[in-house]
Length: 163
Image (cartoon, rainbow, N blue to C red):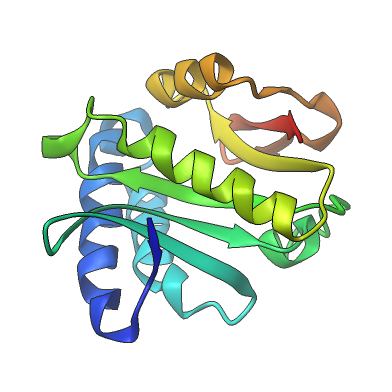
């Protein structure tokens, strides 16, 4: 795992877009999906990101995630009162899934949180992403219901990993 270099930004965006395209049919309003994809495309321009991690096979970026210092930075419009690092937009290219890339990205984010002196690490997901939920739960993340929130026509579920 390594930090995103400026020259790899476009490739990381491509991985994110590819990894989230599978959810198009889970949106009841197609415009909501397109808005979300635009958000994903612009996400790496967010100055509040504390760290962007990437995974490579050879010279090719195959996975990425973003880490924010706290919930307020991660979810500016929600004023999320999480006082610990928050992982957002974990993505692994669909052609590379099943090789442990997401697990390695999560391990690196946990190590980052420990170095920062945090007691826990948070992330959010939804029922639209059952494979992600299984990964997080197998990894040891547990539901943190107090930080769930509703958006559009679904609930975004919070998970916490105690360090």
